[in-house]
Image 1 (cartoon, rainbow, N blue to C red):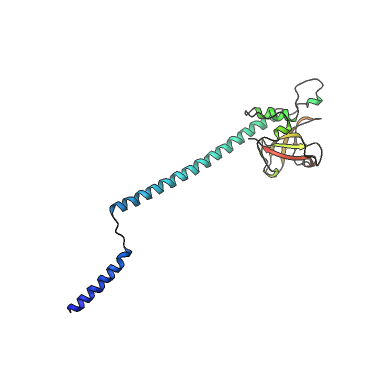
Image 2: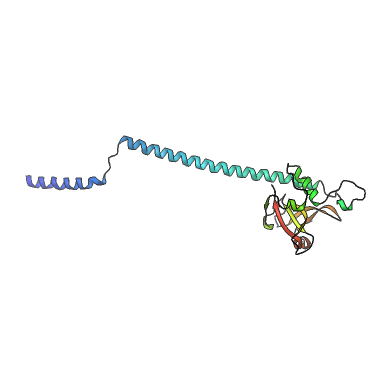
Length: 196
C-alpha cells in the first residue's frame, strides 16, 4: 500500500513539475502594471477618438463656413445683375467686365482675386464639372478648341435636377445669369476653380 501511495505521489509530482514551466507566478506588481497598461491604452484610444472627432468637427465647420462665404459672394454677384459691360457703356455709368465682376463679388468675403481672367484661373484648386458648387469660378475661351482663357463667370445655382447656372458679364447684355450647360458655354469651357 505504501508503494502504491509512493508511486501515486511520484507520478503527481512529476506531472506537477513538468507542467510548472507553463505556469507564471503573477505578483501584485504585475497586476498593477497590467492595470496601468490597460488604463493607458484606454486613455490613448479616447484621445485618438477625441482627435478624430475634433478633426471631423473642424472639417464640418470649415465646410459650413465656405458655404456661408459662397452665399455672400453669389449675393454680391446678384447685386451687379444688369450692370453694363465696360465696352458697351457710352454714358460712363457704373460698368464692369467679367473679371471685375468676380473681383468685386469675392471682395465681400475678404478675398482679393487677381484682376485678369488668367490670373484668377490660377487661384484655388481645380474642380470637375460634376462637382461644381455655388461660388466656384468657371473659365471659358472665346474660340472653340482654343484653350486660351478669356472669360470668367461665377456659379450661382446648382439645382437638384443637375441644372447649373452662373453669373458673368456679357459684352452685349452686361451682368447676366446663364445656363452653364448651354451648348455655347460647353463648347468653350476650359476649367473651373474653387477659391473658398
